[in-house]
Amino acid sequence: MKLLRERIGLKVFLSYLLIILIGGLVMILAAEIHAPVALGRHIARMQEIVGDDPALAADLLENFATALTEILLVAMGVSIAAAIAISIFTTRRITAPIESMKDASRSIASGEYQRRVEVRSEDELGSMARSFNRMAETLEQTEQRRLSLIGDLAHELRNPLASIKGTMEALVDGVMPIETDALIDVQREVNRLQRLVQDLEELSRAEAGQIQLEMKLVSPGELISEVVRRLQGQYDDKGVELKVDISATPAQISADPQRLTQVMLNLLGNALQYTPVGGEVYVDVEEKPGNLIVKVRDTGAGIPEHELDRIFERFYRVDKSRARPGGGTGVGLTIARHLVEAHSGRIVAESPGLGQGSTFTVFLPLSS
Ligand code: ADP
Image 1 (tube, rainbow, N blue to C red):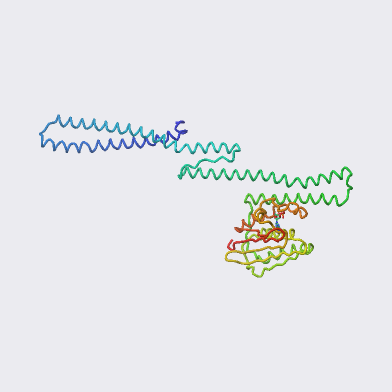
Image 2 (cartoon, rainbow, N blue to C red):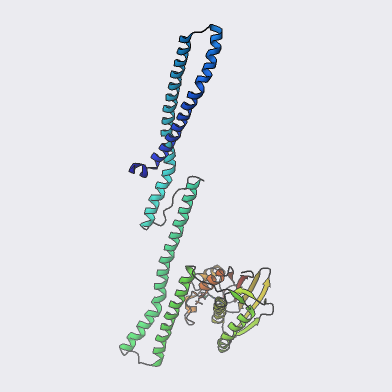
């Protein structure tokens, strides 16, 4: 019984055997019922021609029964042999891919994430192998993301920590006088670390797809005006002009106002950060069939063409030294892209090149 539970081949063979036995039984029953009647009719006709001979009739009946038994035995024997051969063949076809998936899953469990299985057919087993490979690929990507996140994080923490350590050592050794400037430097780096931690929390939620949108009917015009109002002071302080055109804005769209505000704060914050004194930033909104399009264009630092996609990757900065004074964490756009995609929208960056300004465009489906 244990063997039967453990061996798929035995199960397949027993199912064939059952079919053969049922087939044989039906044949025997059919022969028992129909053969004597048919033979009886035949013998009656023969007796009309050759005369009544009970011995001949009995002999005929006996020979017929023997022949029938022999035929049935040979047929059952050949069928059982065929059942054994077919069940071995079928079992191999079924178990080989299963065995290879079993091996591959063991390898993956021990950290060999690049293992895949061969897809040998188009049937259910083939589709199971394909699903298995997809799962392995996802696990491999997750592992790669985990490793690169650890690497990125170590890299991001190194600079502020080294700066804090250097200042603190100089203060403790008396090399540097304890003055407000030195303490402000330390405070700035600590603030930077704190912002990094907050951004990372947000990023990990976004990357895990755990952002819960609270969809409401929102007036995009009011939302943008509010973001502009919050940043206007900083624009004035730096001497960058902010021009807003929201005349073509639809009255209401369905969106999460808090998340959309976050995206706009990031885009307008970046535009301010990467636009020099005397520069300009334009915000305009238009409605195209099915989409609300928000454009944030600046006359600032610009982005080289080959880096336009990469700036949406976490911790990616076009010029590392450029981001330092402003203290950007390099994950703002990554989060913004996740937030826009959570609204079923998309965000793209365009720029004619370094020093020639950039345009960030957000497409939001109007039906969402
Ligand atoms: P950060 O905190 O560094 O600004 P982001 O994810 O918001 O991080 O942006 C990633 C990088 O994209 C920035 O470091 C910068 O190099 C580039 N970038 C973003 N916005 C602009 C812009 N308006 N003009 C030029 N470069 C930009």
